[in-house]
Image (cartoon, rainbow, N blue to C red):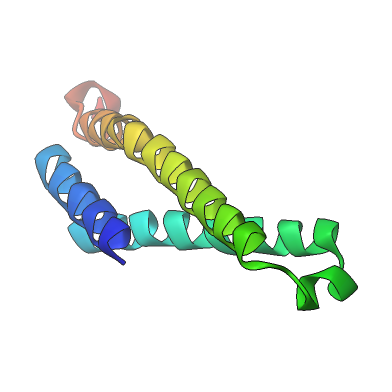
Length: 104
């Protein structure tokens, strides 16, 4: 939960610096983290199998939890690094719309 709070705060602060919607990017940060963990858990369950998943030991469960946290953090970091690209797209679109040469 602490990791999620850190991710959301980082996304909101960075979105504020770039002039993007803070609530939307906070949600994108949380969704990228939790969505990746969910997807990783589903893929791991497919490979482990239903019979083995019922009798999984604590060590394997701990390893899978840490792997999900790390992979979720990596995906959230990738989304964080891509935020300036979206801000640049918004700026260029606004400049193109306000260009006076387009209306002549």
